[in-house]
Image (cartoon, rainbow, N blue to C red; front, side, top):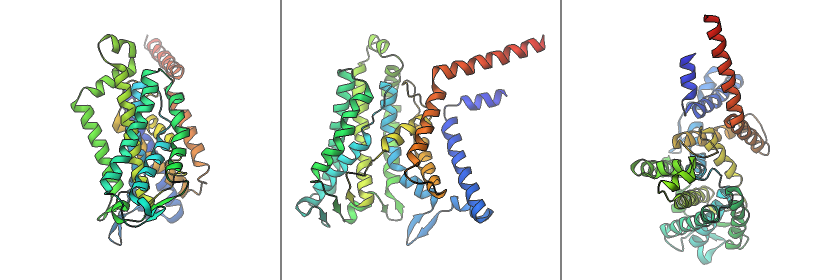
Length: 357
């Protein structure tokens, strides 16, 4: 029993358990449909027309955008004890800016790049940072609740993206641009981009004191300010990083579909990003965080989405299922539930002591 308690207290227990549970459901479903040999197909990696494929690879590729968003969302949740619900709309806006710059006068359909790809990508990242600065200023300096503050761009950013695209879907059918969301050689580019983003942020947090500062501010903002930390600046930086992550995810999403579809890029992705943080074992009340848990949670969410489709569940119902998962996880993390479990454990401990006596 003691070993089980130690395992369950491990911070990555929840995301790893959820991931294994989803994998088991997939395997059981495949075995039920096509026998035991078919159940192992989930882990097969194939090469089709010189491109790496398979269900695992597809989950990693499709889940890369959520993983990138989850990195920024983790920092925001930890520092401000709130969520940035604008990330999906910011994705859409940044994708629109990138595609419009690349298409130039040839919009809404272009095959040649009007500006160098790096210029358009940097412009999109700049817009993402500006959005993050806007959200950060409202939360850190004006003291507005995070969900209320980010509700502004949740509503406005997608609409601004539509204005940038002149209410059209801007297509950029260029191999350089398409490679951002598809393949470099035989390997999926989104996986590489997500790995780079996660590694850079993880190393930055490890090699500097920012990670400790973020957790300190999240645990007790007033105490952190007394010790000399600029809590407002730290929260502000977290929102800027979150906006930057949303911009990168938006460029990847646009490259995947070779266009800026402002109405659909990043739609409901804010829910996935929040769920990834929660599944990662991170408290939505701020404080300590685990970046690895959020990343595992992000890919678990994509695996859940893929599983829903395999089971024949309508795509319209999938967000409802995710919302239920969020409610359950938040309820488990609530002080009332934790106190209830603590009381139960205390009663069991006292009962064992009575039996021994």
